[in-house]
Length: 417
Image 1: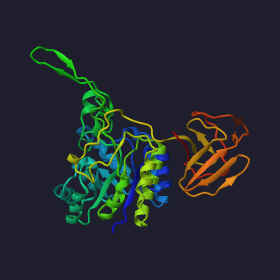
Image 2: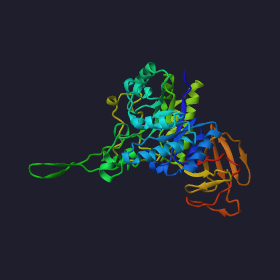
Image 3: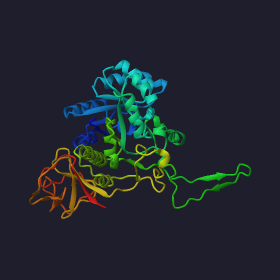
Image 4: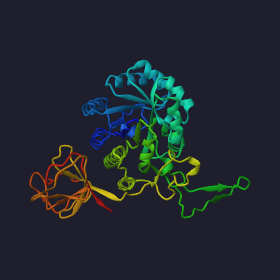
């Protein structure tokens, strides 16, 4: 049986470190050139991305570079230079969508494996064979494909690796092939600058062409978010997916999502994968944890159900909702203390979300106690390393607050809403 890899988003260097700390086997990201996430790509320069690759490899993990945009003729020469420069950093693979870019990458950097982006929309073994013959090592399957069809692809192409999205935003259009943003704001989705127009509320009108009369179409309680897809959440089906034995990697979407999102989704799916192999799979635990993140409502998408069988994949009421928990603070990268992300108060117990195990402790600063399988922290006083004491601290305060003991970097403090 294939030991499935967990692949997490790296929107910037900090999120990359968080993903690795919380158990990702590999991360994916890139600089803004030719990536489908220009906003996150701008977080990396060539220099910082090379440093990120070195950091990832020192951790014994892998990093895949996104070159999955669709270039215009005027950009080909720049693309060649981009491929050469990134290849010299020795990433573990390129994620590519366009056939021409695949051929170009294999010519310039034949030593770098090619992973086919979900943007290529592979749904069947015929298309998979074509890309495999072009030298593609792994396909990131279209989000509309079924597990049954992936099993058939693997049967026909046993050496081809298959990667499947397991969690994150779902696109209104077919595997991201959308033009709404281009039409409305001139931002080209397939060049990485989608404006998420499908998330907006819309008012609908009907026009009588003979009279020119325009009627407003009245909405009911279903709302006006007519194109807003729910978020994908396949945590309850990880056991079924892994039991198929054909999936090489489970992929989390979210390079533009928060640090907390990266930490929680990575930690949860790491637990689900490990629990499956240990024979201890517990789906409600994963569902509850993922509900703590902001989301548009959850759907199990199409991997385990056919699209025509689903009637719960759209959220018609709103484009985003709060999760069950609010992050109030985050441990700094040097573990010296916490920075406030919301109102932080003394004598209030907060839950800790940890990337690694810790011991219980109590002293003048506060205590850390284990509550069942979880840990809590309480500050007896909010004191900085310089000795200043606060009655409360709010988001935006840059003073680091001391903790009862050194906590792992990127630990989150949260409260239930």
